[in-house]
Length: 417
Image (cartoon, rainbow, N blue to C red; front, side, top):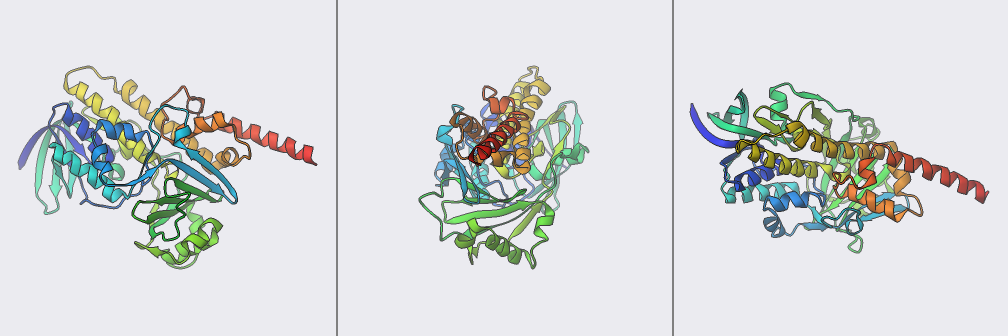
């Protein structure tokens, strides 16, 4: 069997894998990426967050991405009935990037993979990892291409950025269930001819249809808009017909989408994504590190996926470089803990969203501007800035604020009466 040798094998050519590969390659090490699918390929996670721009900059991807003329994103808008809460990244608490992009992921991911190949990192598509043997930090990985040809890749370290494929967790039985409730999405790309250019397309819009059910609206620079419904599986059973019939009935049932998307042309038939939340006990082991969605994927709300993918890979790549240099690395303290910091903050806000806590905060009539700036930083992806009280106390402060708002509103109602 053919054998290759590299310093680092990266599994997955998405944002996690390519960011890690670029940074490690820049340090002078040999890197190879193996990717199960053929690019371009469709995936959700189309609205980025400003924090990921720092990782994309260090990976030297920003110049190539700017040439693609993707839609710039300057904020996030939340809608519930007649109430609107508009966050602008320019007004966030944390000093960081004030914008990012909204991207068709097939184009975005292909740009990253093409760019890393131009740097000198080979990417082998339609290549599946079938087995991995570890000998300390060294490993031998067996891969098989689409034609059934097998070979072995010897590496000093492995970065698993395989996303939903979750290669190492599945091979070594590391998966465990997420604490988040199972949810389902029905989505499509639409030819959005009624787009309101004064308010869009420079932000994502999240519409609260009812408690536990929301809609994402993500305009692209091409005139196409990604639009999807997210809810518990039972919600979708309330609509009859095939996926397209259900999808159009849902659009008609929501006042915010009814006029704009009535009879809208679909780029592809509506698709279903469900049971996406998953995690593992540990994000590292002797000879490997897990990055991106392989560690934990939460939920589409707040667009955390690409940010957690790129930032975790940015951190992991630097630690891998130190490991290859022979330096001691405390993977628990230097990787697991900061990665979990980001995951835990986003998880708290995901749960607060579905519980209705954030409804109370977002849609109050006279919001506290300081608090709004602090929450805006969370929505921008700056979930590692513990000087922000809404990051440092992510599990308690939003709930406390919502309770205070509730008490204040009741007192005001009594005064009016």
